[in-house]
Image 1 (cartoon, rainbow, N blue to C red):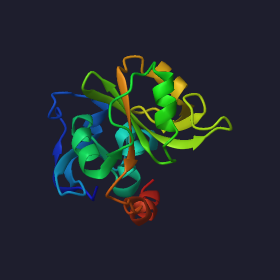
Image 2: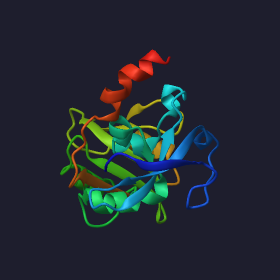
Image 3: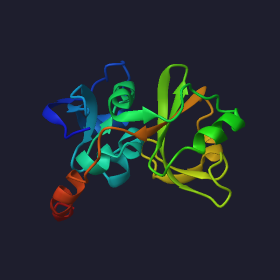
Image 4: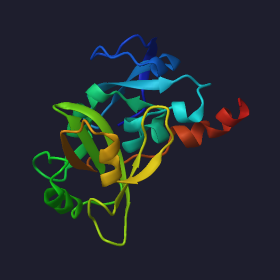
Length: 195
């Protein structure tokens, strides 16, 4: 993923026809994947309070921290295809503990977990660590964010209780791109001086 580009447009609805009240406090831009495919991203207005400046995809794939944007959900399949590598072949049912434990056994801190409802991506979270019991459903920790809510560090078991509509899961590792904290380090002082 790279920096957003072009001139922003007002948020009315995304390409999938969704309209979220909180998205009115930002603009829509495009950003390139590592394969130069442009995807739609949301950039918050400069005055938006911290927790409202990004949502789950900007958090899990770290584009907020690097470039000040969150990728819109319907664009995530393109991002996953271009910038990430699947950790296992098929999606896993959320109640298949044995398959989930096996998939988590091959994961590392920084890998991301995609939550699906049918074919729609409804959430993403990032592996933040592993408990003393190893890499299992109850001991693997995920950092997760939902809309305006603060980031949480939860087990997969706890995350699945929050996303009860999840029909399948898929783990990915960062593939072809390496993030560099650009926006935050470049703009932090300027942002602080305006608050």
